[in-house]
Structure formats: C-alpha cells, structure tokens
Image 1 (cartoon, rainbow, N blue to C red):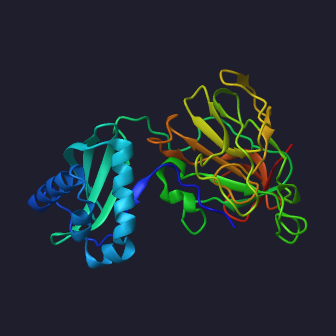
Image 2: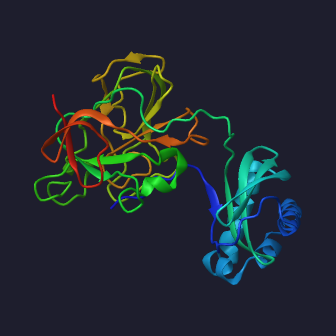
Image 3: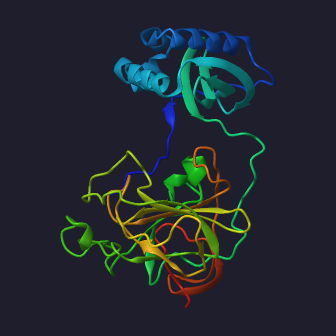
Length: 323
C-alpha cells in the first residue's frame, strides 16, 4: 500500500459546477472581501458558517479552524486578492499574504462557499515543458514494475498534482507480482530496497537531500515528503526529481556533473513512502511549489518483453533497458 505523494498544498475542496463568466462577478468580489476580513481577524468559525452544507460535512469546524489557523501561521494575513480568471467551478485570484503568494480558488453556490483551494502562485510566464527533450534511459538496472504511470488518474494518481503529473512510481516484483520476499515487515524484505538508481541522462546535480531515516514499512514521514532526494538539471533546462533514496546512499554532490548511467544512490523508503520504491518525474522549473510536470519517454527499453524505440510506460508494465 502506498501513500500518495502530494507536495506542499493547502486545500479545502468541495465544488458544484456553475456557468463560467468573462469577468469577476460581484458575488465573488463580495465573498472574497468578506473572507479576507474574517480571516485577518481570526474569525474562523464565522468563515465556517459561510460554507455550504456539503462543505461543512466534508470539513467540520475543527478541521476548518486547524486549516485556516495553520495557513495564517505560515503565511500571515491576507493583504490583497486580484481576480485573474475562471476555471471549471472556481474563480481564481492572485492572493498576496504577508509571507506567501497563493493562487486562491473559490467556488460559490449562490452566496455560500462550496469550495476553497490555496496553492502556491504560478506565474503565467514560466517555461513550458510538455515532454522530455533529452534522450532518457530508465533510472535503474534490471526489470522493474510500474506501480503508477500513465495519463489518467486510474493509471496514475500523480496526474492530479501539477508538478508531478507525468510522474512514475517504480517497484521490483517477483513472478507472482509481490514486491517483497516473505512478510513485508522490513525494508530488506523488499526487492527494490538497496537497488542502484542511475542518471537517466547527462546532467548537473542541483539538489541533494540525505540523512533522512528510512521508514518502517507501512509508516510514513510526511515532514519531507520526497525523503532523500536528488534533482538533476539537463542542458535543455529539464529538472529531474528522484525521491525516497536509502539513507546515506547518495553518492553525488550538488554542482557535480553526471553522465547517463552514472550511479546516483540506492533505492530506499524515506519520506512519504510506505514501502521501498523509486518516485521519478520531470518538471519545467526547479521549485516544486510552482513547477509543472512533463511526460517522459524512455529510449530503447523493453516493455513486457517487447523492444520499444521510445516508450512512456503505464501502470503494471514491466520495464527494463535494452542494454
């Protein structure tokens, strides 16, 4: 069982669709100003009273108060909110807080709030990256199984999170499909634990995090969700994220240049991970808070026994490099 890897995101979300409008509707102007006033005064119970019945059922007052107070503790008071656009059932604002800037999404059912979403603000001028530009090998030796991968949430829950929408989770399984040898109680019982993780292309190491303990299988460490981590930057400005390395196994340092196939470290179970596996994705900028994920195609790989010149594997496929 895996805990979904969700990078920092603050949200309360329930929504009912309504017709889109070309400009800010007065009811949204009023609602946002009212929210801002109550939030800054710490009147979180009054904000809860503005929620629709569905919203209140999904997010009881204790959870709502915890969410809003935590947001204020991290971000400070809400200074301003400038309308930008509509998306699905939401009006979207650029919300300036004292210490953070967020994209502030709000959905209304008549005058009641039935959806709120706060996520790091993403400027419209960020570079676009739809797929990899560099030729990539798979980031490991031998045959691994795609636990999560593909373009739909049924195949890949990552698609719901912008910065990792093209991500993969890889594990090692036996002929019966199990990822462990006996009782799954220790990391060493998992086939993937300690396996070598490779550079998928020539790149520069721009971030290394090490020293985070590996979890006991079935538990997680949500304080740093990617655990022991390596981020590479290619000459084409692609940013490649590897997560959940084994503690103290990472062999590369920030600023180092690596070549395709170089050993980066060993597969572990650190961070927001319930069993040893590799989380891998590519994004358009270094900062995960504002990044958008890109789809990855690997060159000259074998997918379920069939040689592929280029392939982006999907859930349950077994993959390996051709050489």
